[in-house]
Image (cartoon, rainbow, N blue to C red; front, side, top):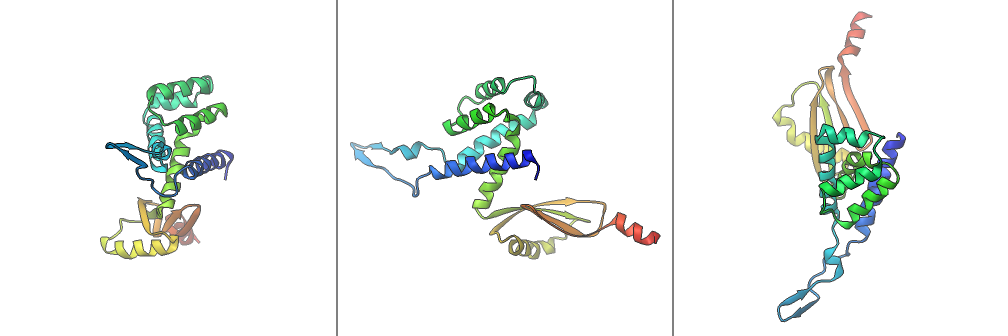
Length: 201
C-alpha cells in the first residue's frame, strides 16, 4: 500500500469512528412534553455517519465532475487555505464535524485527497451494513441464469449479507474470471496473451 493510499484509509477510518463514537447508543426520544412543546436532548442534533457520508459524496462529486475544480485542487500554487475557503463558499451548510475535518485536511495540505477519502468512507459504511462491493471481470457477458448462483457464491466467499456487484468485460480474457473485493484478488482467468504464447511453443 502506497503512502497516499495509507493516508486515505487512515483519514477515512479515523473520521468514521470518531463520528460513530459520538452517536447515542440508542435512539433517544423526547425528554419533556410541556404544553405540546417538545424539547430534544443534544444528541438529536448530531449528524450521523450516513449524513456525513452524504456530505463527503457531495464534496467528492464537485471535485471530480468539474475539470476546473479538479485542476484547482491539484495545483500546489494555490494554498489549502484558499481551497478550504472556496469549499465553504460552495457548501455553506456543511455540518460542524465535516468543517472541522476539512480544516484538519487543509492544515496538513491534503485537501486533494477528499475524493479518495470519501470513497473509502463509503466503503466503511457499506461494510458496516454487511454490503460488500465486488468487482467481477469476465471474458464475455454473463448469462442471467448464473445470477442467483453467482451472488450466493460471492456472499459465501466475502462473508457478506449483500453484494454490490460491478461487472466489467475484458477482451484479453479468454476464459474464466477475476474477482476483486477489499484487498483480495482471485484471478481464475486465462488470458489471451498467455494462450497465444502456448500456441507459439
